[in-house]
Length: 321
Ligand SMILES: NC(=O)c1ccc[n+]([C@@H]2O[C@H](COP(=O)([O-])OP(=O)(O)OC[C@H]3O[C@@H](n4cnc5c(N)ncnc54)[C@H](O)[C@@H]3O)[C@@H](O)[C@H]2O)c1
Image (cartoon, rainbow, N blue to C red):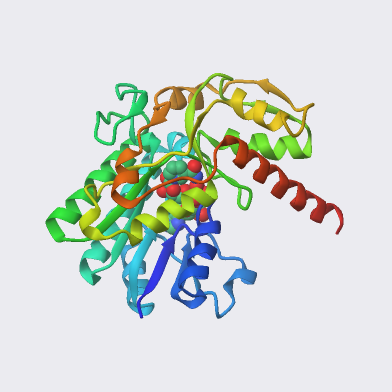
């Protein structure tokens, strides 16, 4: 039986996608890899983990051969704020890594999951009910790599018959691993600071509206699109998916339903604000709903309730040690 290789597995998404894939397909069929050193606790023999730099084609070829890989979830990338701080490195990792993954997939017949982003859109994209197929002229280097990545996936699907699939993820809210330098990190930080300190200083303006999603829904989207029947998929670059369209102020209000004294101050970071202002406010994800029955489970209220109780449990566990 072939296995599933995950690149960038120690990041915000990989930390939860790997256990979800292992629960579904078996622990030893899912190979977690990252540029960072895998913690020894996670590197038990029955949970295969490896060091892998996706910019090194040879390392990918060796891993695919060694583990008989049939599917690659390619998560390794620099996120929007980190990419803007190091645009040349971002191009090298985001594009070089994807190119290597697609080449190895072409050589060994692997399926590829590519996580695109709302960052693949730009200021000239319609901001509300953003269509599946529309203008994509992003102004951040992150967005440039995401739209180029989408096109490359399309190309490898049509030219080389590689089974590429993807979703355009919105900002993701989760409690397991810290976010990795994205523009929507404020949403995660807001929940953590609400529980720990009752106060948060937000780097995005109170009224900036963006798509968001709770991690369990994102994991479902990533697994569902890979399991969809190939002949149902009209798009091989990436599908719009969303769960809610929210602002820092509406998230703060939802948190105040549970922590009434929660205070938010605003100290806007112009770089991340400019990135947020260039993104859509609310995606139209009807193509994903039609083609592979996408349906998120968590709205803002459900996500807030679950996030706060999980974080409170974790904090209580730390304090009782
Ligand atoms: N988290 C979000 O809100 C979000 C939203 C939209 C799209 N995405 C996309 O999903 C993917 C994963 O995002 P994430 O939030 O888990 O990111 P993250 O920054 O938390 O994790 C990325 C991981 O990639 C690893 N990495 C960096 N360079 C590497 C290299 N050369 N080789 C191998 N590994 C390398 C890092 O060590 C890190 O563990 C990215 O492609 C990102 O663009 C994320």
